[in-house]
Image 1: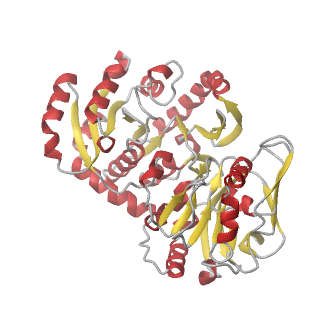
Image 2: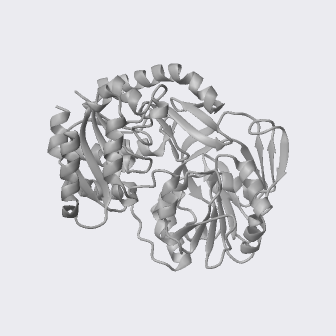
Length: 472
């Protein structure tokens, strides 16, 4: 059965969300469906049941299809670390840090890994829904492209090109992308999709007619602007609330900011130069380069702002943020040269980087410590996952128990606490406890709720029957 590919004219055009919705819709129509993205560049990742790391988008798409995520769905993941260096994860396992040129030298071998992963999925499922990367017409990358041109030629799918009208120029971007494609790939384009329309679709009529006459390709749907299932990449940060009472420090190498999607409506990102006025609770999130981001906190003065804030209001550190809040970080030459860096000193914990290998695991933890927000649900369990290098040594005040061991810790007054647990705020009991603490209403919605809601929007505005004909 032919595959289906969702490509875009740009990054953040809505490919991930549209792919997620189609995985859900096709699954509900009786097809066994698997998502696939050959190579993803993302700092938002997820740990599978087997302890493998993949992009969170493919994990959510798998959930939408009613299946368990696995590493075949995202065989190559790049996590940017800055200075043109990215961590390379192949089939769920981190293999090293590489420059762009070093990565390009690995493309031939990676293409073989991708082909095997895709072929395995194709044999196992009725339909593989492939997500492209960035813009499909990146003409400077055609010779080494894996996710767009590479997959189009490998899988020979029916291609839908998505354009984001909210960013403007949607007709030009769809037409230009189409014309710039190699001829063999252009022939595989079966439909255009216009995403994120604010207003009535009939205003687009003349433009759609012109585009269809110029290309011979039908616009199969116009999707209205709707709450996305999750932020697809860092560009989406700009769309978040600007005046929420929960502040999230916008680290230069921020990772897994999708951790905070469930509290998005009461949250805002705080730049390193910003003041903390109007914020009632501050979060220091994960980082792909903890030491560099810690040094940036110090050089911008944000470290002192956080310390002063913590005297009266809560500060929570997640993963790299947890490490920064501690006493010190000792790197044995894993992330940088051998060095010891003083932390913010708000938690009695020290971290060491001794090995390149990462801890990747799904977790279920019981709350045992005394800390703001958590104290309201002490004794209850939370679920999430851990993805981190380094080991943190806790001196006192642990907050979680997992498999008869302790994880995370709090300050003596309970105002500051940290943990390695990602997806903490995807636990309804945590969100309700936070809502009560802040005395603000936060309506909790799970990924499942968000998927169903957005899938309905897509089904109502896209010609799904036409898509089904392409894959039969």
